[in-house]
Image (cartoon, rainbow over all chains, first blue to last red; front, side):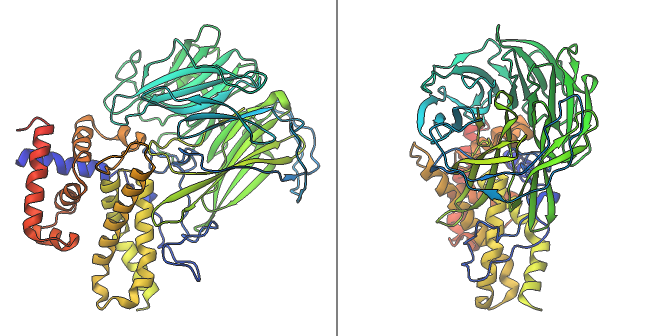
Length: 430
Length: 162
């Protein structure tokens, strides 16, 4: 039995070492005044600093991939909005806008459609995706997950009608595979059946997805699993790659590999014409993501060769439109994290304006662009707390629409969800 | 020493080990961290009842074991298919970072009963003796021995080592 016992010990050690010493909170938690030992308020009585996806090793301290959202328990459409005077946003070529002040929100009522917002929003559930009317939250369509798979990333192409979704194998111990699908919405918001793209079935796990607003390109990131390599990548280099799909043919036209030791992209965005890809990636040896950009007509090769660093240290999510928008998490104290949505000069990485700041325990934002409706983004504010029983975490996800040209903030819906065992975040797209 | 200071010291000394123990039981670092954080929060209210503060590590380990069990039961309740066991679920990212042969062992361990998994984790990860395992789980040493024997036999069969 000694050989077996050694194997068991080694396996346990390998699993345990996934918990990195620097990822464990440095300070002991303290119970909030008047609370039961295991009751935690939404404001963060656990006093834990946030580490987004800290369990992913190598880890990005500011990656927005969190263990949230398998089940949409409650969807509550709501509206609250904020208005602030702001200059017209600059174009992606790098003109600067004046810094803006943050002003309090003003009330707004909703109607069946909200001017300036896409008519439909797609959100992940425990069985697939739901299509809902943006203004009311009314569910108009559903997309079921293919058998044996779970949806991993979602991207809309800005048309309000066409969406792309990538899936992975549901059995987390099975060989890693990535699948790519397209579906479309009718005028009434009903979803078509999934169409599997020819690029589907690749080895590896999907980590990011982006679609260009002109509908021509789809970009994705795949990471290889342990001892498994993407089929068309030399084993000496394979730790995953970024791929570009021509949406007309559904085939991969170019790819750029991550060199050994690089972390994979955790957020991706394409400019509206699909000419430029921006993504968040952890540089080797670093502890925070940076934003990089890559021209999509660059020859296939390595990500390092084809991309340049833009900056935005600590960026968790990116969105490209006329401007480059990024969410960055900042530890204000061991007890409080702020996530800030800013406007950035894509040439220099300098922040030119702050659109919104979220404060609180484990808040983070994830962006989905829709430049068709005028610089509108979706920011997701997720707060983790415990549910009614002990050790039953729930995550409250608020889906917001932000018009970055006017500063108008519209809360669309709130979901109460359970953590995803596969570590897949809430998927939201439009 | 004030309780808060004592707990801080315990935290510094034990948080990493306890989090790693929770990790091998639940398979998900996020849940593992939650379990351990709640164990320390529970220690605050339990402190006045501790006859011997030196037993606090034992309390914490017990709290972690109980917390891990609750996590797995909660996962089982959320699944649409009722399982006759409540295995740890290894996150996709964790699966990426563990070697394939180690994944096979962890997958085989995941198919054991909860008690078998706890006994194996306390023996082969924590390094407890049978007597220490018995105390931690509140069972007899005979139960520990038989549980471990059955677990290793099942693993050997699963991994082709019989």
